[in-house]
Length: 448
Length: 116
Image (tube, rainbow over all chains, first blue to last red; front, side, top):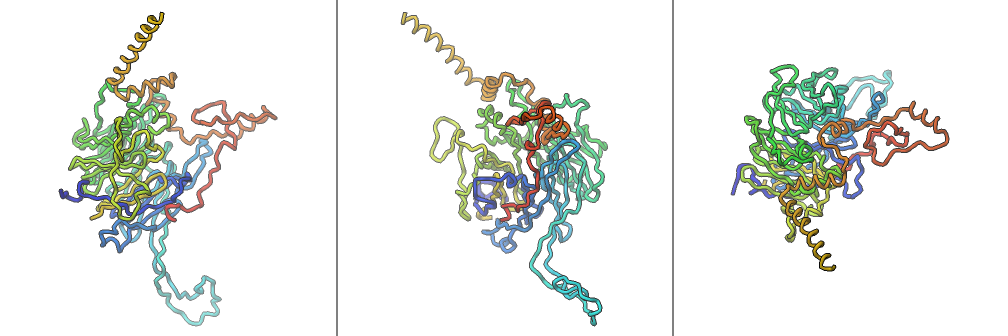
């Protein structure tokens, strides 16, 4: 059954590439902490716990050959953030890159925002493929000539050179967050962006680093009364006055910046009513939203909590329009997941280019796709065992009952240390980037 | 006598069976909650409340104070300072971090293996 732009029924996902070391001994710095395609999908950025950013570029030749569309190679890599120690507060500041967000391209250079817990940086990534030759006062190797030896003048010319990609920090947005930054989001006006920490959201202008406006503040006067924190925030894709933020209590608040300077009063609040009979010790923890993403259309938003993915219609605050169970079989494992802290894992989610399919990660290096149109879902595994080029991914099944069929994996044999928290979908094509602990997998549609 | 024993055994068994069938009716979440409460009877009743959130907000706090450290060293003189417990999750006033407790924070000079 053919679907417009890829219902998961007609898409055949294949392995394309895997990046990163093969050894099991993972250095903490190599843990991938964020993955993001740019607006054309040509560039794919990753950030890690060591504060480094690696950018991959889609091979230009392969864009026209459907079979090789998913080929990405290293374009640039740089150290974005370094570890710091705040001596005044006795606070260690991790260099881990929490989020990367690309700016829409305005000129030849590419720009991205990367943030750790405290500081946001604007990086310019530019190409240099020419260099000037024939200076009058300098030799080719850089030594200065004696001016007295110059008898004629010449005009330096630009000659081609091997492509060099340079990354330079253009802005540093610091000292605006007391708590840990969990989100950044570029506004559709392309001039401002927001940064959110556990209790506050700030609005910045990309050109101005010495001040930012506080637009949300949920810090209670008495910290003993603290009941919820901000977990994620995002600007609406088209409406530059609208943004949403999610909380640890499972609510999403939509705010309109035209209403007032401080958006503590929400314009809309999205919350699914809870069945009081089902309430348990774990209810609030598993309802905490770890990610919120607007659809490309701007009509819907998706939230990820510990066990499910929910799609909300912005016009309806009372309940989500769709709910997809990611790994419901974990509900009967919550006690041990609480003990090993896995219950606090923050999974992200993403939309495909035409908002027909959503994707999120799980444990055992599994990731899940939910086709909204065909009401189908599928589970795949990111593993080097299935890593023959262009080999079709085989759907995985988890057996929950007593009888385990052949090829099914039992819940008890799932590896909870292998978690896929970060995934990204190419904005236009069926190419996805899936991050395991320290490896980046790229999969693509066989037919594309 | 043995008959009496048998009878007591059977009467003990039936309540267990009843609880098991009740468990099937209780949601898996509640069953997990019961398990947790059995293992940690002192667990507070407000799970998503202040304690959990404050722990989250305080990530990164090291509390190394050179004044405290040197005073404590002077007091104890020859004896060893109490070292940190393996799980340093609690905010304790008595524990005095030593320089050995604080991991060396140096930027990673090695390139990412993704770029290799």
